[in-house]
Length: 225
Image (cartoon, rainbow, N blue to C red; front, side, top):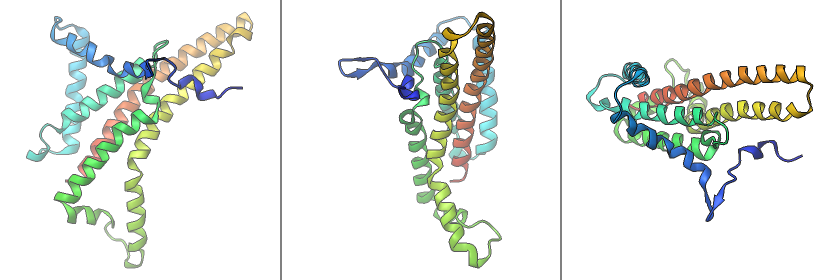
């Protein structure tokens, strides 16, 4: 048997370039259409979603002058991940968010920027986060080690959570789809119905995981100021 995860490998190579990753940049083709089309129901719905996200991120971040405009960054992050998650559900389109090279490239720069900003500007506040309030003196060295480890692995957990959730559903759909030719007509109808249910679940997962990624990135930023 070949590797089960080989279906997720980039396979299109022309001039030593992996053209599969170009699906990530399709967002820049569709976004400018909003400025040229008459506002329709899709634009109104997307505007309401952005407004709801803005109000929620604004509540988490706070209303300080230093935090003005930060919600734009997290809304853009949510939009990018959501677009790639949903686009990966379409046939013959590469799912870039199921690869660590994509998810880690999103989480690691954010975490490094938050840490640099926090330790440079609010060093005392960052040191206080290493020891929770009310910790006994004998446990303080252990709590510092535990908090440092939990802080360092944050970009990895963000990246693994997104890629693992995206690859799990796609892998299940692929495995069930490969068993179709060997099934009877009755079982094939059951398989098609199951695939439709799984596709609906994967659509919900695409929305939820993009929201979770953006919310956790927002919460990590609030700890630094």
